[in-house]
Image (cartoon, rainbow, N blue to C red):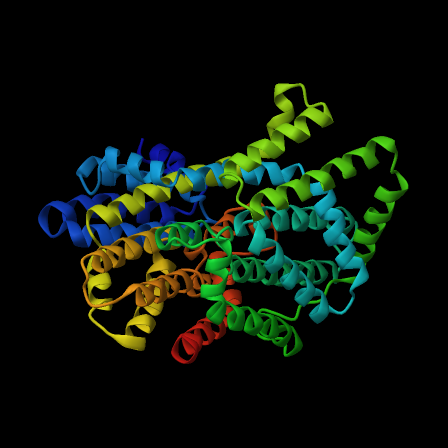
Amino acid sequence: MSDVFIRNFLGKTPRWYKLTILFFLIINPIVFFFVSPFLAGWMLLLEFIFTLALALKCYPVPSGGLLVLQAVIIGLTSAEKVYDEVAVNLPVLLLIVFMVAAVFYLKDVVFLVFTKLFISIKNKQLLCLTFCVLCASLAAFLDALAIMAAIIAVCFNCYAIYHRVALEFADRGDGQAEMEEFKGFMRNFIMHGAAGAIMGGNMTIVGVPHNLMIATRLGWSFGDFLQQVAMIAIPVILAGFALCVFLETVKFPGYGYKLPQRAYDAIVKDYNSKFARLNKQALFEYALQGTTAVLLFVALAFHLAEVGLIGIALMIIIAAFKGMTKEHDYAEAFNNAMPFTLLIMIFFAVLAVVDDQQLVKPLIQWALTFGGKTQLLTLFFTNGSLSMVSDNIFVASVFMNEIEVAYNLGQGFDREWFEKLGVAVSMGTNVPTMGTPNGHAALLFLLTSSLAPLINLSYWQMFKLALPYTVVLTATGALSILFLM
């Protein structure tokens, strides 16, 4: 019977992984009841990160879900607190469910734009830089997570096109090596795009959800926020663009892969065949998607409504004019969004534990004991470090709560300094978060997407590819705080 249990528990994951999760489930209550709830909270946080790190072995929903379910049962947090976390983060859930699904309906026109980049720019350094700049520009006015959804869709289509061709020569001596080269190229390409999306998201209140939260607390408009963060965000994004070219030029470890000629030819052939088959119906659909994309851009740029609600509006417009009259017409769009939504719900439960057990409050109070530029730098690095192991939205919210309380109580700083502290929190929870896949929702979405296992983009691979960006951009941000604020 025990063999049947082990075989069914977490399915086909390795036996050592199953035993590790069972060990966590046994040790957590012991630590909570007999040692320290605070220690048990930190253990749960690190255990959840373990499940994220091994997402390619087992999607974190069953393993991570069991851990947080146990946390609620033993009292590390409560069901009411988890509900409160979900309610507070409802805009994020609406974004993930509906905006990501809405972008699915724009995939044809987006794919044509990005495919045009593939076939028009053969120099990899220029291609990656152009892609990075384009993703940054879009993310500044749209949303980094929505941009990642589009990037993943494009790369998935490119992979599918080449994979059909690769099956013909997979058994040949050079076939496997060429496939690995193609996967390496796709990893490089999508990580440059992800870096661009994150850098662009730093710039505006619509780029990432917690930028809007910070701007609201400080009473900043779209222009006010951009003006306040520009002294840090602009040097950071320029350094990122330069680094993109440098990594490919020197073939930094993990970078420098080339697009195989057969892959290039297959993508060009598919692109040309789509144009050759264009008819009035196809032209209408491209025009509809292009028009809807412009409306989406305007609505998000001026924040006419919550991002998720704009996504719903986009889906309604496309459904009406494309003639989507059957229930199953909508199913495919939600295939990528819903598993990640479930994972984010579990993540909110982890955040409830972090809040209930006050795992980060001592660090906040410590950071506020400093003064002057040292305080700004301490906040920047503390926010960045915590965001790497927790969640940047949660960290930004907790820090801004404490800073706002201190400001309202008149604890040693004026309005101008309050605004500088807000900038330090915003940049700290945006820039260093690239260090780990769980630090930024866009990277976590990529890690847990259906594309990641196809191109061998594991947690460790993503960490290595993001490391140079993390080091250079964090250093640039710190120097900007030191000399420009």
